[in-house]
Length: 162
Image 1 (cartoon, one colour):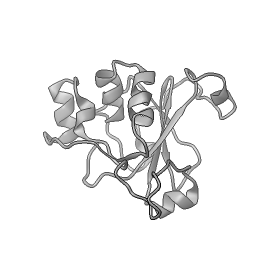
Image 2 (cartoon, one colour; image 1 turned 90 degrees about the vertical axis):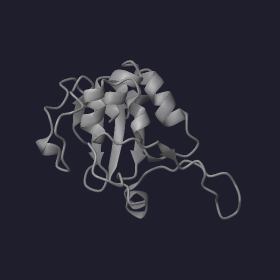
Image 3 (cartoon, rainbow, N blue to C red; image 1 turned 90 degrees about the horizontal axis):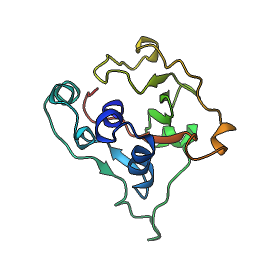
């Protein structure tokens, strides 16, 4: 879904995509919806959603026990397990790094031009060939916002979707 959103809804502009997915929410995402596919060809939308439509939902409605506004958290191995987060996504200039949060500190980088209908499984070894360009390291993230990776973590989908 993120590949198709980048290619179509966000016009291959990673900064616009990052503003929507990261800066545009106060806390984070509960679920990414089919609205991210706005502008994608019908055959891609159908392949990714099975023809279903559902809205994206954020965690911005959360209320803390003391009534203060909720804040973003840093995802660690412990918070990932506590929140049942299974996947992390790092938006890089040449592709999206997909990390199995509970099993790896890094993951394969899938090139932005990969067909979003490609078969992905819970085993990254079975994914399309990784992007060729080397990805940015933590030290290179400080260079500029244009080259810095953007990280987002989302809960697993409630139904099987690609």
